[in-house]
Amino acid sequence: MMDLSARCAKRGSPLATKGGRAATLLRVSRRSGGSSQNSHGSRHPGAARLGPQAGAGRRMKPAAAIAKEVMLSEAPERLCREEDLGGMREKFEKQIRKAQDEICAAITALDGTDFHEDTWTREGGGGGISRVLSDGKVWEKAGVNVSVVYGSMPPEAYRAATGVDKSDIAPGDRVPFFAAGISSVMHPRNPHAPTMHFNYRYFETDGWKGVPSQWWFGGGTDITPSYVDESDMKHFHGTYKSVCDKHDPAYYAKFKQWCDEYFVIKHRGETRGLGGIFFDDLNDKDADTIFEFSKECMESVVASYVRPTLRVDLLSLSLLSL
Image (cartoon, rainbow, N blue to C red; front, side):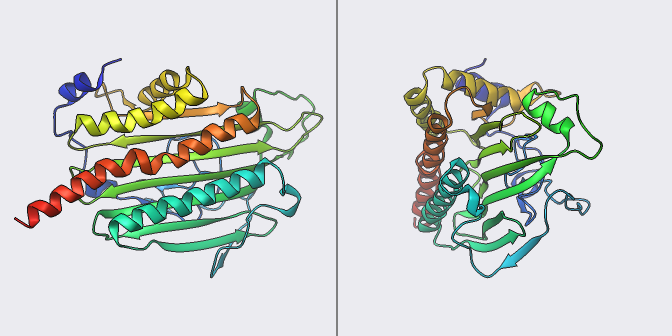
């Protein structure tokens, strides 16, 4: 694995990004809570759909296993079902909504531009809250979405996701699931400030045909500079190394490598951006322990990312005043 300076030298500085920043403007889909892939391409439903290809080219039909959304004028107190109160499903929803509030507040405080909010629910439970900042002073576009989804998936998807195989499957059998996630992409105006992406999610199946409920956590945060400032990148990676080390000394090396390998552009022999952390199918400790790790990762987004953006923005303002 190349270190930061070697990777920057290999790619050149400034880093070339295919199509430029304008080509990577995020598109936000109000159907973000469906069975689409998240920004990391994970198979799990539930993460908000944010990314350059979301909704591009053709209109996707909503999955039949997920109810149609109903738009609301304001967000309800909760999106999860009443029977899920007091468990991990409600706990994770509360955390992603808290993270959405805090991250949007921090970005607005720096930019001076408010986020536009759309809210929807679905019959039978679930829904989402999308927030988008457009044409700001610092950010050209930024989105922070949360979604809570109840749906069902075919046994083949269940088998691939859990490794649990069942032979007594009737035609049309489906496995009920719950998914909740927060996802974001932020594109600053100044090319010297990096683009950032994160998503964190929790997925759980109902008990099915004698098999107990299956659950796991996933997510990550990664950064893509156009011009590399090594101190900013050390700050970003150092923030998440501290979080990982606090929860498990093996996490950072493992999750950083996972992120690096996930974003390899094979035909170029290089990575997209300068990485971060990424993890999936995490259920090797008890749920509350992993929840605390996921929570601290969300709470570190502002600390890891705002510093390099703020440094560049203040520099730009000082140059303009000369």
